[in-house]
Image (tube, rainbow, N blue to C red; front, side, top):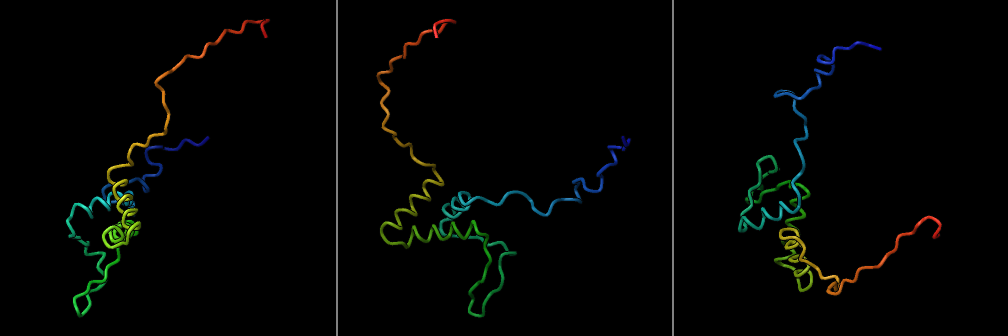
Length: 125
């Protein structure tokens, strides 16, 4: 059995103020992206690292994360869709932000009757 100094073992790979992982946590959820879109009243702030270029006519080309793309598409469907597509998109947004509404399963438990059981003794089998 090797007697290693545990305090020195793996010191080079430990996290510190200078040694941090490349990935800095979870990606934002679609739910949080939707909330952000709904609370901004149509204003959207794009971080400068997502701006790819600005065209001569003033159009801005951006690269958005998948979660934001889905949230934007869902909001677009809710605002500009036709009939059932609009309603379904609005329903999905509401369920993401507020949670699904309580659903009745049709179970009536007003008259609960206990089940009579008997103890099985040895030899009763």
